[in-house]
Image (cartoon, rainbow, N blue to C red):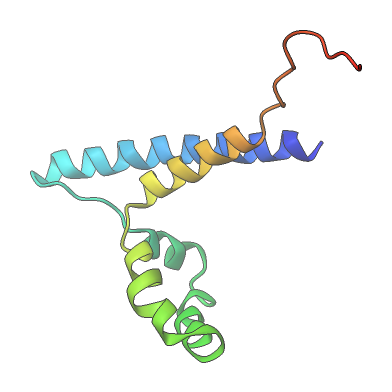
Amino acid sequence: MIRFFVRVLGLLLVAAGFVGIVVDGTRSIANHEIAFTPLGQVLFTLFPQSFPMLEPAVTRYVSPVLWDPVLLTILLWPASIVSFVIGALLIWAGQRPREEVGYLTDK
């Protein structure tokens, strides 16, 4: 049952990634320059009150080094590609295990 939900979440993220690629593509064509929506902007749009508290929480409770080079870089990645990659990984993780080929014998 959990495997089913992992695959459904993966498919939704892949679909969201494709929608994001289409939106970014139309914006790029309209502006005559390549433009991607960063992950940080999408997260701020989805969580406008709790996202600004992420930076102080990470620097205070985890590590300031984790925030500046690591999380800031990830938040600048294109949201559509991040969504597509995470969705593809979830689909892969939710696959059924391969059946064994051949016979197993006990001797």
